Image (cartoon, rainbow, N blue to C red; front, side, top):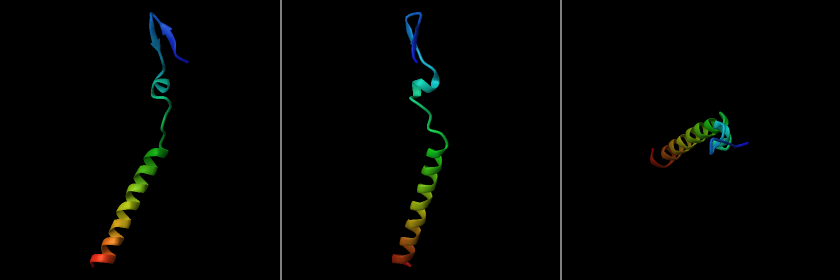
Amino acid sequence: MPHREQGRIVETETEARAGTTGQGVRWVLGLSTAAVVVIFVILYLHYFV
């Protein structure tokens, strides 16, 4: 919980960031980007080769 020290509001790092994202966000971003690349390659091969 934020509190006052010497007239300033003090928060921890987690409170200031409003929580942590963890490793799950990185995995979802990486896997979805890889999936899009694979889908585009398949579409390219299907229509242009």
